[in-house]
Image 1 (spheres, rainbow, N blue to C red):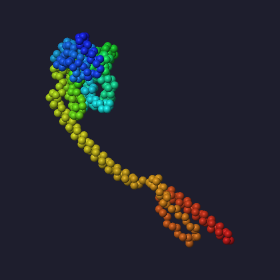
Image 2: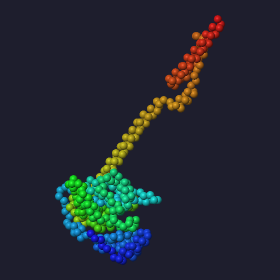
Image 3: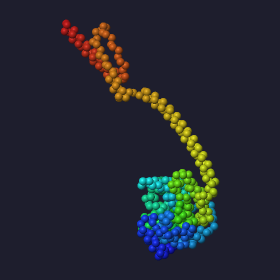
Length: 395
């Protein structure tokens, strides 16, 4: 693979643009060839509509061998189990939408993301390749993948495009050249253990255009292997506000057809993914019907739970009220009661002629009763001693 060298005029234009400062400035006379799906020449360096620079290294043409393999007739593999194909996932715009408000970033997940990820991890070998910085990639993975992140084969970010340092902080077109992925996995296979090379092992399969699927919302990023990309509609603010995005469901339905294919690039060239196609209508009808049943079932279940919860609360409210009625007085109520209780002092006993005791107040506790009884006994014994002393003097 050799890069096509840009012309001196184009190089000077590119260097002029890179030294001009902000990325929203550029040569207004430059244009972009949107009609060329398979670039055979170096495009111009700046696309003003998207404020995007092209890489200084240039864009190599598609290899003839790639085109010839993609031109083959689609065919099915023999009966399974089928080897796991490699899926390369984009993040922002494909699985997530990031909003910015007052320097605060919010990450929104595309509807059915968790279902989609479970579908992939059960059937494919999955990696992430995003043009965002590693810190942004980590934030999106934390928001949407969470515990499923450990299932990823590898995670690539902006650092894996091989761009020049001067391009890293600019809005430069990032090309996802899948041959870089294939070469890295092949290098790992050379040093892999024998057990990992056996059927079902991590390195049992050699990856190339026949068994690799890129999922991205930008057709420009896949222009080196265009027949290996599922180009989805971009997930943005409008899609988020609408709240009815079903793109990932359509992708799952399409990918089920890729699992038994011998050559996915040949199948995808002849049957490209089209989000607006009627081929998903029947699948979506079944899904929506099932979803309505599930929603109705959940609604009944929630209503039943609410009813049971209310009954439970009513029954326990009565029990709690009864318990509160039997609760002993608090410390505050005890102190107030002790202030109100007057302790009677019995008069000196004169036998049968002694006055009857005054009526006693109702006592509130055994403790108070014992306390009062003790005072009575001590008071009575003192009166008796006084009487005996008087009788002794009179004698």
